[in-house]
Image (cartoon, rainbow, N blue to C red):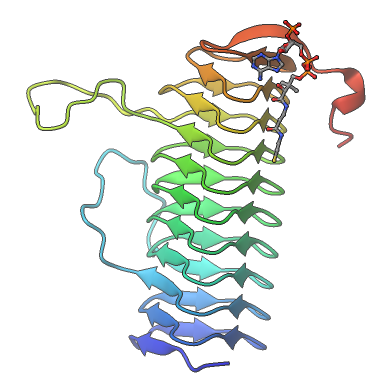
Length: 231
Ligand SMILES: CC(C)(COP(=O)(O)OP(=O)(O)OC[C@H]1O[C@@H](n2cnc3c(N)ncnc32)[C@H](O)[C@@H]1OP(=O)(O)O)[C@@H](O)C(=O)NCCC(=O)NCCS
């Protein structure tokens, strides 16, 4: 186990915290008890390219906080102003951009990237190599399978400042399940406990407790009562 490099004076580290080799911690980070941070991680990274203006920022002080019993696997980068709840796991190679909140007992799988300004709930699993764009809300007990991509920009205005573009991320309601390789267009809502089938392209809202599949995704049935959450 290693000693982290601390880049600042305002860093609080709880009891029973273990570090791998080459861990760098920036100023303003609070780490709870019994946290494990494995090799080559950067916590509280402050090289934010540009702070967005069109976001409902939480009240200051903005801290970067890892709760108790959090596990951070190798090569994860957690930017400044992120919050991770107790017992959550950040897997290898995750990039968690500024103002991402992950609840408790949740995880971000290997290679997943969350572009920030996003809230992810409790008991939620975001599996391997998922791309969560900025300004997304993912509620509790949601599951997102590998290689899903969630978009937010209605128009692609790259190099075209004269072209207006609004960014609205998806809202994924409690208990929804999203299968492998799904893509969502900006601003869609995936309803409570809805299921989106493998490879679907979601262009419109999916109502609660419905199953939608295909390109574009269409509702094909109801989530059986037997598969509904029990709490
Ligand atoms: C949504 C889902 C559950 C539907 O499965 P299902 O209800 O068992 O569907 P069936 O296998 O009975 O197939 C019914 C029909 O729909 C088609 N179909 C099934 N899933 C489809 C999909 N995702 N997209 C398009 N068509 C699909 C089948 O080909 C079949 O067509 P047919 O009647 O012409 O033969 C399934 O597609 C799915 O996404 N499963 C989750 C996979 C996953 O991501 N697991 C997580 C891994 S970490």
